[in-house]
Image 1 (spheres, rainbow, N blue to C red):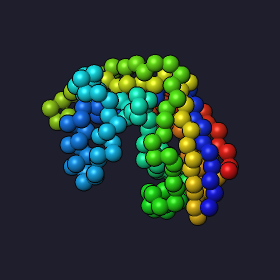
Image 2: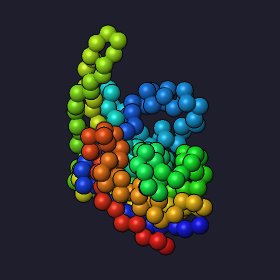
Image 3: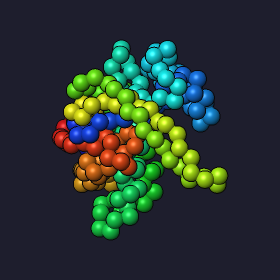
Image 4: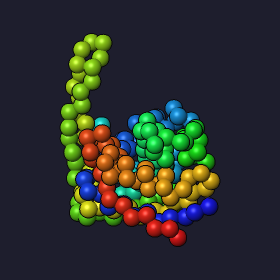
Length: 194
């Protein structure tokens, strides 16, 4: 078992991913069969939110990421890097189970240290449907570039420093959070063994 401290500094703004409307968020999570009381209490004040906005959970007004956001990022990184021959990730079989069972992120609520104010990004979303192209407007809170998070990661078994470094290196290219395929949420990191 190895434990690491990870410090991520965002080089591009980080977009929030949670639906900030309590009713919409609650219905989504309920349909997944998850007890969401813990997460409902960290949604911002409802009257300050425009319909359809995504953003960040908050604790005492400070935006946070939940630990599962990082585990989801590791699954995304490993899943994509498995397609690249000779990577450490290409050797991972049943990688989702491995990450779920052998990678532990703490604390559960990871504070985002802002380098400025939260702002909003509005952008069009395009989709090809059977009825033709559809366009909608998406609105997300964004934490400015320079914002950071610090968390502890404990890895067991076959998940070693080379694999973790590979996933974090991938994040410097792909990003974290919403709209990462467009480069939002890219970061630099420091991985320190404890």
